[in-house]
Each structure stands twice: as structure tokens, then as C-alpha cells.
Length: 153
Image (cartoon, rainbow, N blue to C red):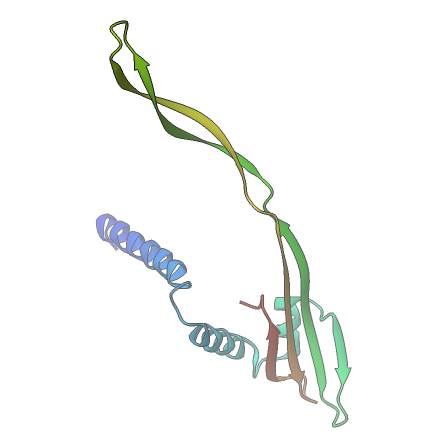
């Protein structure tokens, strides 16, 4: 690649990546689920159990099924509390007051004042879980995959 073409290509790739990340919020949930499942299946189903363990680490739990296959489970269970931080904004207020002149006439005067206002973000807690289960056949090959939770993708 020439220097100019390479630079243009790299910028295009970077912009496509940014657009892809930004699009996550606009892609319907069902499509994101399908994409997640397809990616995990493509990466692990049909591969050796060693490939799975090398990528995800040892499973948190295993279970031997009655037909001799094994189930590897990977779990995420976390509670996060966020918010509670404060910040200062400035608001302008207008006050109208009456002023009486020495001759008895009354006029209105507008005063604008800017005052600091301290705001606090509300505190909230979110509980996130993800259980991923992989079925490993008797030949140590990943046979199937299932998941549940709100933090898998």
C-alpha cells in the first residue's frame, strides 16, 4: 500500500469500528443476541475443550451428564453501585423589581444574577449476571453452547 492509500484505509477502518460500536444501541436486542450466539458458536463449537479453557480459563464448575458428556459453566455475578457524585452548574435568574424615583414615578428594573447550583447524580445499583454453559462430548470437543443473564454481551 502506498502511504496515502494506507492512511486513508486505516482511517476508514477506524471510522467503521467507531460506527460499529455506536450502532450497538440501535441494533435490536434480538439481532444482538443472534450475533452473540453466532460468534460464540463459531469460535468454540467444534473446537477442543482445551481451546475453550485457553480462551476463557478454567470453568467455575463442571458437571458430568448421565451420557458421559461434561458441562463446563462460566459465570459472572456482580453488583455495582454507581452515581452519588456531585457537580456544580450555574443558572441565571432574572429578578424584576420596582424602583421609585424622587418624583414619585415607578419603573421596573431587571436584575440578572448567576448562582451556582450543586447537583447530585442519583445512586443506583445494578446486578449483572451471565452464565455460559458449554457441552463437551466424550472426545473433548465442544458440542453445544447456551447462555442466560443480562451481562453476556
